[in-house]
Length: 376
Image (cartoon, rainbow, N blue to C red; front, side):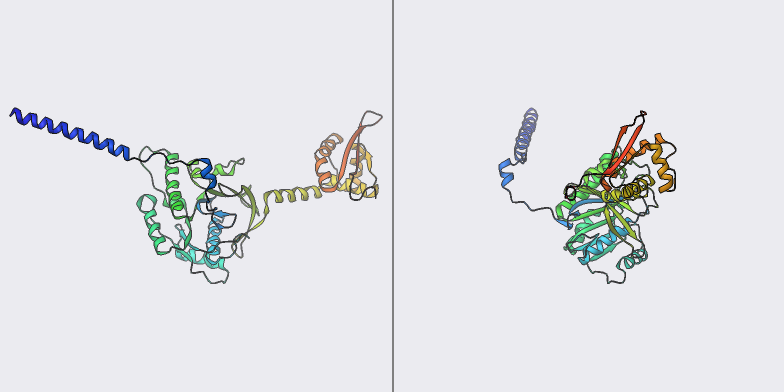
């Protein structure tokens, strides 16, 4: 009996020793940190960023967001049809490939109607593939997409409309940020591993931050952080004729474009950059300003320059513009100060002030020096 106990103890000890040894061996087999030195990194010949739409939409994980009913489904449908047929999108060159459009909030009737409106009589490209059903991330979406790519290996663009339809609840106690980053991260890993573009269609929050449109994306910053490029459609007022498209990303230039939606053709097109549109708007407001009109008429009468007090300019406004330029001389003086920069930028008109004999202020307007014409 005593020998059996001793044998059993020795057996346990031997087993423990083997387990410790095996554990050490397993630990020694673990990979060390992978690294590369600067000189070797510099010498690597790496592939450039691949674009689905040149200079506009790269591969990897991307997201477009806007409030509901802004036309983003028409935006992504036109994108898919353009890429599948190799036609330009918003004026940018596309790299032709098959596309999968997951229209998860649509019926085939609605999708067909919308597609025919965008095509406007053209034949649908065979490379445009669509579905209105897909599992969520917790129940096999990634596996379904893997299988799809095996069957359709020429697919380089997958649009998921909308992101919310393929999301899951997550684990109990998991933070909102962790869940957002995890779920977006799964799609990023999928896009990265296949070197394709996955574009998520998403919504913005009801509460609007006018200082940063990207902070308006629904959910936490976990979504924004996981995406490689983000596109946000916004307007100051819902009924505005133009829509601002704000773009930021790791591989594209941060920019703002002004878009217009053609309701007859159901297509978006670029009308200019935000900077160009704001400049044009400022120019139009400037040209409509009766103070500017009065000054320009005075200089057409006296091309060498005009000078006078604010009260005298008010009187000239009544005659030449047919209206009061301001409620009083003091208000007009402040408005003239605000107009100094646009007067010079748009019409090369310089504004100066000096004191007159009575101690009041006198305003002077004359054309600035032009090195191409003056002195000749």
